[in-house]
Length: 370
Image (cartoon, rainbow, N blue to C red; front, side):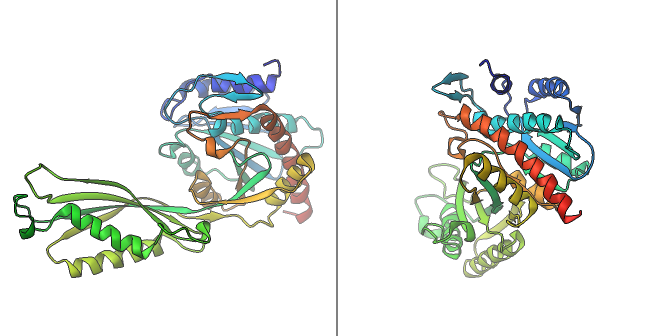
């Protein structure tokens, strides 16, 4: 706890900040980032945005200050910090803030760093969407999420969340042969969708496959009544070579065929949420700079990750139309778990990685003459 870098992180972790309750931590960040040399402001939704340095390029480092709901007592044990948000994602956020402040003190540093601490990443993505609405721009961007200190996440799949409602005529449950059952019909339709996108079989390449998951089914009225309405939710994950529009078109074909074969069933459907897949060019100066930094500090090559989940990197990357990656200390498998913790060694090393990567990126940017 004597190390001020560790103390900065533990102070962040000691502030309870589930999505929607970020005011206390945002106030703390404003004060601390001003002490570190940033020019700081809060936007209309509570994002904390700090700027430091002047010149080209502009590098955006974006992390989130909220966590999922659930308290996990803060403790330090065997070189690890246990707390809710240690990995997801106050560890990466603290690393970016401290690295940016340190780099800006370098007399040869001539660039602009923007560090954005956003709200509600775990819930609505309200924070990053407001950054976009306010016209955030940058030549390069890094999103602070746990990739592991030696890894760079260069791609995320997109997502498509569809709500489907089935309606039928109803009657007494003692005569099930006389009526269509809305719950049974929903499951029949789901079988058709799952046959179209057979996620139950382990694909040879999960990242490059369209997968479908039935996430919720609601229906039924009473024990003596044949279900006359059901609602189901289907979550599809979309690889970079495909768009959500293309996948939705395929879903519509399945539903239309099912309606033709089942004229007594009425079906309505809608998109509840969608995000396009995103993958950065691995030869971009940003990936090269981070790879150089990791190789220099870790003494082994960086690992490039492509993930089957979907993140705010998808939204931000398409909006700013500049190279963007996800990087940060911590094991993402610990996200939201009772064992969430970050190794102090990895946290401190990630600060070095950020520092060296930023300096290298500025060097590469100058060489390509942007």
